[in-house]
Image (cartoon, rainbow, N blue to C red; front, side):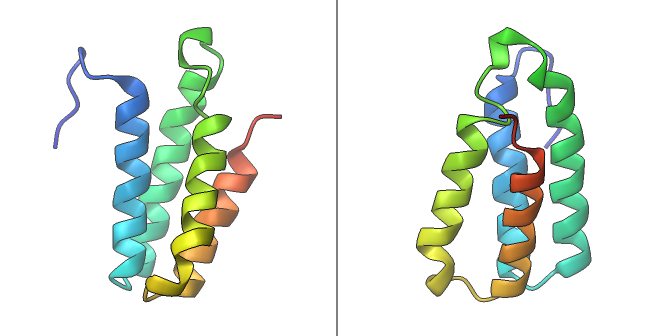
Length: 93
């Protein structure tokens, strides 16, 4: 998928994280980490814009809760844990 200028930036952020989670569940460790770090980097540009207030805040908290809740059903707990760590490191307080 190629993002367009008119795409919702918050939705694209969620998409990036869900892609990282999917890669983790598939056991694709390197690809999972690359996608998570790339999404974190893309999100960094949004965090300072008040229009995207939830990126790095509510979004990351919700994603970490989702990972915690569904961890027993995912196949690669170590990779899922790594995504959670990346989300936690990127949280704005």
